[in-house]
Amino acid sequence: MKKLLLAVAALVTFSASAVSAAVESMPVKFQDIPQVMVLFTDAPEYQKKAVTLGRLPHEVEIGRAFKTYVADEDGKPTVETENVVNEQVIIARNPEPISGAVYNEWLVPRDKWESTYGELPMFDRFMPFKRVSTIKAIPITEDLLTLLGSQDGETALIAVEWNDQGMKVYKDGYLVESGYGIAPDEMGKTYELVEE
Image (cartoon, one colour):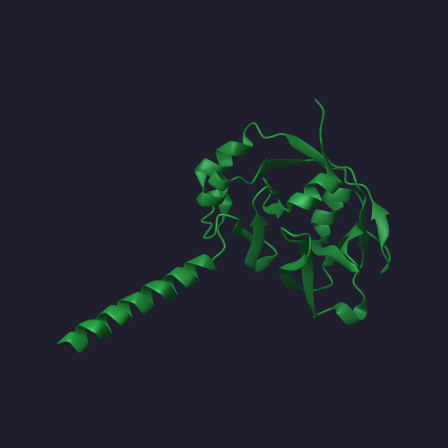
């Protein structure tokens, strides 16, 4: 009988930890959380002050995996997302490296790029573009991380339209109303508050 009870207890414990691990890795669609969305009501607007470099994908990149790196809490590069390059995206890059020769690069759908920067790149080499649209963003606090289902109090995984695995957001970073996060380091370097 003891062996049966131990086996049942072990099974329940294993099942609970498996469910917990599955929940941890599921991205949260923050737009479905009213307590989060209300925070954007009076959120400030920001304008990107730095230029963004943009280019068309090289032919050899089509169909290949593309990793986006951001700086972690120690300023070291860490993979944020991984996507596949296709002909309908623009490859964007922040001009300054995160560390050494590692840059913060990401994929942007062509229509989103055009509405954000006003025109599409014409070549497969990086050219500078100035953002024409603004964003509404809120600081990622401990309370916000809790609403987003954070397991460690430092990060959360949010659902994004360009990656089924989601995007990791960081405490002290920013959550953008249109559906993504900005790492703390990147926000300070590349955005400024829009004066009314």
